[in-house]
Amino acid sequence: MTPPSRIRVPKTAELVASNIRNRIVRGELQMDEALPPETALMEDFNISRPTLREAFRILESEGLITVRRGARGGARVQVPDAGVAARYAGLVLQSRGATVADVLNARVTVEAPAAGIVARRRDHVSCARKLRSWLNETATDLDTPAFTANFHEFNRMLVALTENETLILFTTMLESIGDAATAIYTRIPHPDDTKLAHKANRTRVLLADLIEQGDANAAEDLWRRHLTDAGQILVTDRGTRVIDLIT
Image (cartoon, rainbow, N blue to C red):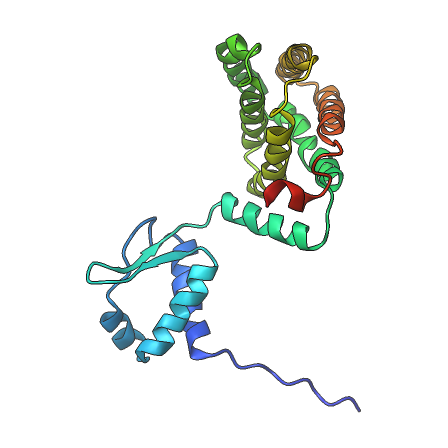
């Protein structure tokens, strides 16, 4: 008979960190809100100062609080955001030797369905108008280096319109690395930059049209082809690994 595995009992600091963490993610503690003084927390949890500070270190490592030392110091709440997850995901991908191609291919798989999801929404016409309005406002930047940053904003807006928080989070994690790849690519001017910018803009205009028509399959197919083509342009001999982009 296999002996039962030992059950690990959480340390007191871990339990305290868990209590504060739950209050943050439930919205009971707001962004930049100061936690009570250490003496008050020690009394509330019936713990020592070293235990409390160990709990603080756990929460700091998770990006949930910042701690300032000194007379005017103390712990302040940092609400979790996708940027923290993106940075951590980047570190994991670096440690695993992931390539930029890996990430950009995954982005196609994760992000392309967003176009179909938006086209299937009951308010797809309104969504299309928002996308088209954005395109009209930024059309004057097509012949400038700013167009690449603008297009990433369009991508994020499209995903945001799905209102699927999980999809938004995953896409943000992948887009952050895609942004880094784009930044490296655009450091050196290319003869086809303007041509590619206008092509990318036409694709987005057509995507808005398909979403307005409610043609989910065509919208998703178009967006998948575009993301695939864009990824192939970004995968160059410079920065073939994620670590080459972020470090």
